Image (cartoon, rainbow, N blue to C red; front, side):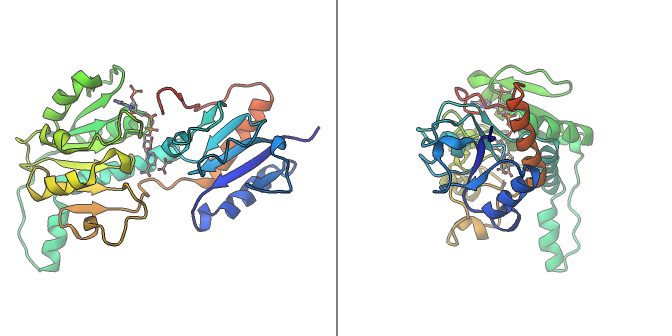
Length: 321
Ligand code: NDP
Ligand code: OXD
């Protein structure tokens, strides 16, 4: 019997992330299975049993009557769940040690850049200014992480090892050695009140949308070493209210913003973030994904699924992550 086909619904991406490159990868891994880029008139919709998606167009997955599993090619599933016509089949996301350690590199690098005032030294170098600033110890800085999931837990361990005072905020109660854990609505304000650097590693859901807003910034600690708190967002652009970030930087509520993600990506050329002196941006690549490893995982999961074994990293559609 022919194996169920794998359809690809991949928006955007160049080089390693181009839809064609993904197709080549899957073909190399499972030559006996039909791999098609959808829509494809040469294959009956009923023969597609699996799809691998990245930001699929709304409605594109709904037209596949025998779909069994949707594989999202990244960790965040907000773009997939935004489609109200999504069939009710398991949605699998990426959760890998490789992605997690790249995210940890990003988080730790930017906490250290803020902590060691590296932006100041970059500017001073350009002006040939030799002016060492006060250097405080890591234990003097309170880092607070929004989200205590797969990615945050790894960052927490490295930040702790470096000596920072680390706290985290989650939906459910968590307990992590050496970390002050807060949860739910009640824990939000006390968590912010002890935080100098707010790192956002939340998924984008209806509950978390716009959480990085003026009210949130105003609740952050103001007695820290920087004088005013700083934020780092590597979750999703929809988590931040961008005019609020700009206003908070301009009136001194925030001392700095480090942003990897934006409401609109690519960031429009006329965005004030590009040239703002207190903003550090990167083009949504806090963690580049290892496409070869992800395709191997998708294929291994399909094979396990067909043997009757459970899928891993299945998203809880009710929770939205
Ligand atoms: P997880 O699903 O493992 O963890 C999510 C965490 O967020 C959990 O701790 C969860 O709480 C918490 N959370 C969710 N909703 C709420 C809420 N309403 N209130 C409080 N806490 C909440 O996700 P990952 O760590 O794997 O990934 C996080 C996000 O990082 C992804 O969704 C994606 O958007 C982003 N990402 C960005 C990348 C980039 O390159 N910029 C790369 C990879 C991911 P609880 O523990 O109670 O469930
Ligand atoms: C992801 C991402 O969610 O790269 O994997 O943003």
